[in-house]
Image (cartoon, rainbow, N blue to C red):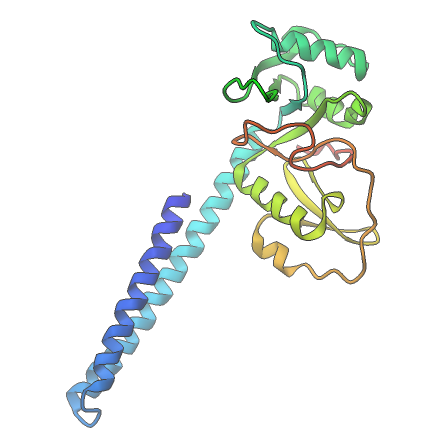
Length: 250
């Protein structure tokens, strides 16, 4: 979808460049000539039609991108990423996660409660890879997410499994409004913009619309929200820290 969006943008730029050349040629011709006047009028109408068609196509592609992203995010609703879990050769990642949950979060799950788990990315000697865990029951995922602040001080943090577009928006929001004023919940990105006021953002355009009328209150930085699946080398503290309890609406 992104490649289609880029192609349309390039097509629009190329079209505008060629139309500018034709416009210049028409302007150099004799403006009193009926033929030139007719061609100029037809050219203007054609140009307006094509530009409108490209704009409509861009809007449709953008809509499709958002829909695909929404479906992709929904498919990840039972997944959490665990950062900072010590890595070992020939490890059983599910067993490590179950032990961590039992010891630190006081949540005792059986192995069958985990649909799949694995380290993300290629092994690196200087970095500990996060563990992706997909739970069979959404209720287990939500219970763990709600209790994640109990991991404070352990070096282990839990984050949601964001799609790349949402991760990009999240990182832009952090850059503009500060790490402590941005967090994710159920795959959505939220920005604190005032005393008790928050905004849900899904794009750069949404960020541009935010007008901060007063400095937002900075909350405690505990836990990590908003990791993206394509960023396989994230460490604890990336991309942002925040303790927020989910509303558990899926």
